[in-house]
Length: 120
Length: 182
Image 1 (cartoon, one colour):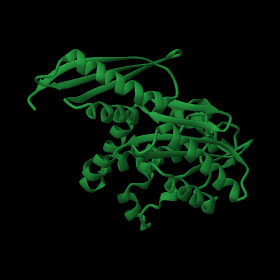
Image 2 (cartoon, each protein chain N blue to C red):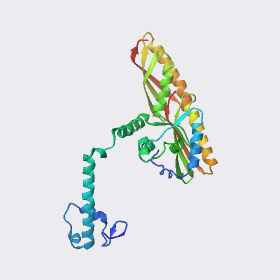
Image 3 (cartoon, each protein chain N blue to C red):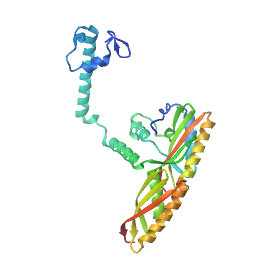
Image 4 (cartoon, each protein chain N blue to C red):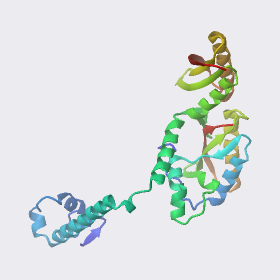
């Protein structure tokens, strides 16, 4: 997450939109997973969740939405395989995320997609 | 301890001033002001409690985080560092598409290993406004010619990154660092 971004929205907000974004990302050919940011990873450590009696992490919880003047912005970190170029996969994910947000009635701001890992 | 609003005391002094003076003798106002005397006593009690709790945590093994938790956090931190910098592939008003150097390096390793007779070891990138310079350090199977292998690796990396990055690859430096028996 870049330092100039505002804090992510309350996790309880936009749950349906985040679920739709997660599905749109994970059904993109070439995408293998949603990657947690360092902050999310620490927050979602299984041990923490178990201590708090929370269920296991869901993919949509890794989708970060940020309120902004131009609408809701999104940050998506992904892992990919080598079936397509990074450029193709990343661009298609960005398009799909924009679509998923718009389909949920949100005004869409920036959508940043970061490919963090690649493996067969 | 009487607070008017936020952390300003009823006498007009702020609590931080009282807090900062703990450990030092009270000034004249603090010696005579009932509010400050009360506040000072409260802050001293809080500080004593905090000190005791810290000491308790330090000496009670059950208060330390389990090693598995520490190790999990360190693994995440290490993997975050390993991902390295990001290379921006697309930058426009709709948002950025970027790839970590770790992901790009893995992609380059795959392309190099596919050449045959070589194993990629370390891959690094240097970006400047004109494009990207790539350095590949590899091990070569005995019996191969370093110049031929290097040319094949350079061609493979150029092809791959030309597609992946949509930006000029200025050059691909190949260092044969090791040899191995097939």
